Image (cartoon, rainbow, N blue to C red; front, side, top):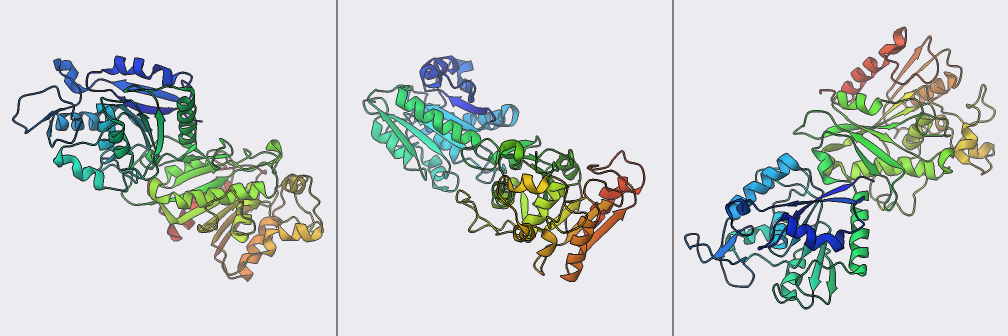
Length: 492
């Protein structure tokens, strides 16, 4: 679980140190979950207060007024605060969320109106973050800022609103009014006044909220350049998938390639290491997927459900991650090739009850890349499947001939199957080349575009084969040309 970074904004008469003390009870025990980054308002360096002064007009002299109440006012200092925070996000970010107390909570609510919902900063929407926690906040009464609250898409994000029923500085009704700007606010009330409450119940709920946020896909991955790990299932850290982005940003959605590494269904981290980085080097978003195996005591249907979920999650999050939902491929090595071809031949064979995307997002890939794949489970097929892979796939469940045929993917290619690139070597001693040959022949019969390359020499498990002798070391060059012809851009 990745540690969250939360920008913390103090009140009118506060500063970073004051806020740290005010938050200390609430934040106790959350050090491993979140980093709370408290900052001083830019005005404090000049001996001033808070983030702005509420005045009747911009030419009025400064008054010690944070802006609480219903009287119309102009906020002297808003422009300076806004510009300073945008620069802070650029230089010190990214931030996963914002915490605000009092005037800082009012400011945080305004910053939501400057939030880019799709994770792509623009001049009008320069900020990217995923949640807010507001304590004792109020709506701005500056008419020039009222339009920020109208952008409902920006306010469609998780939020907590901590409200003191005895708060006489910022009346509780004001805080409830702020909460109504958000789509699904979590309102936590306490008997105290204008404080950052840290009661056991509030701490419990805030901690659970942050744990859930740590497990959610981050909107900021759309523009990030560092690999990002994202859990496949709500409430679970593993299995997960690791997204690797090209080093340069793109104004247009990119293709993506999901990677299923080998391992004989005994473990999910066999051959294929570095493939996600290779895909990113060539203009795709490379996504290495962890899936259930014997090592985690997860068999069919869990292994299949993990693969299907990964495809649906990427396709469903395509807008956030700047991915083209119609250009998502799978690349499978060895047993990972069986899982990849299982996804392409059986996209709806089983839907996990907890997969909330299963009914409206397709799990079928747009292209399939198979490297020395395990394909057939048919017992009578000679020389047959790699020893142990069938048992590892099904676990302790019996697999008769009918069951084996159901998951022998060469028997299930039809005219809806996506295009296929497949390669292996003639002297592979672990998974015979005839597995790949069977699948290529099935594609030909179904009139599916297929590129089949049988190299004469090379051991099983070569992965990208960068250091191999002979023509097999150039299989990725063949693949790049094939992907380009299929509409998968390879520009870096």
